Image 1 (cartoon, rainbow, N blue to C red):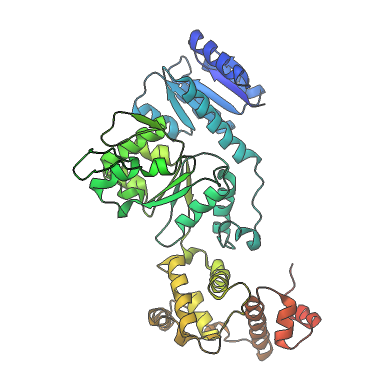
Image 2 (cartoon, one colour):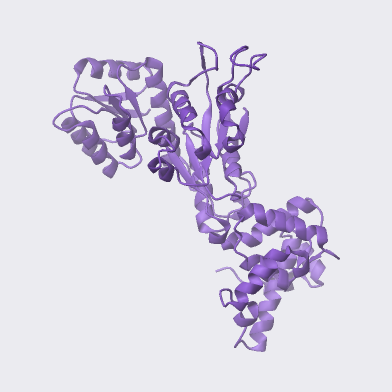
Length: 456
């Protein structure tokens, strides 16, 4: 049974909160001020703290700060009769999960408590995601061998079961929508609608209608009523890509929807309840846009309850070989034999900087498959710009060629490295089936195992 510590110096509010949450099945402990709350936190364990902001001698912000230092996984909800943006934003900056303004609505309180406890449970109880790539690929096709990408997968598995709003950062082509789909796929909403919309592709003058819908006659050309994206995704997940391009006036309406869980169609005076989980994405930091007055700070803190940063491909080089294999398998089919990648092509693929990230790698592999002959991908089958960029880097000394890497090695060491490389590529072409690889190589399975590097 979740334990909740309630702190408020107004006896009426404290007793009301205590009764409401007790009826809901929670084990509650009331405290009439911040000092008593700190004493309780030192001796007892709580899953959630609900605290008023305006108290003496220790106010809610001081209590939040001290509680966050010692109880990092405990959820915190702030109560304030001064529902200003500044107070709410400061509380969330200090680590509060959410805030509620007084006088509060009963259903708003209960829903916020449920969301805070769901998030806390997901963080504290979910097992750490295994690092094996086979498991990672189950997350909607996400390939992760590099430590920084494994952390992304770990975060997905931890927060997917909650209803928490999530902000995904990543350069163009890193797979922000793939992450959003994985979050939906592993959430309780997985059987409901997942709807993706690119905010940059929506005309500014039509965005409100697209997002929230409109009634017949709402404006010139509105010949019939229209269901907006929020209504269409009701019960499911709405992925707002390129949220940074959303006009400021629409941002204020989105903030209201996130707060009230209601929409109002253009031209209507009726509010409609909606239950939608929001996942937003941006390829630039919203904090920079806030400084330029292009993005609302209060909306930013509503969206970024949890932030997930996807590393660019150049910062996860360990993922390039398995990604190539993953893309080849997807393009060729589950049972077909994969093409071989010769040494020169492998060198280009592993040393290119990939400014277009995974999307550019996908396009490159598709290009190579199209022009490959005898099921072999060579340097000549790759796009010319990749080859030119890497060869220029080698000439300039920015990239070390394999020829330079092998300088000073004995013939035995050189041949050993080349054999390992050839064995690895052959095993990849048969999707890791070592028995098939041995037959293809014309050696016994026992010999193949002897030649493979031993795991430490």
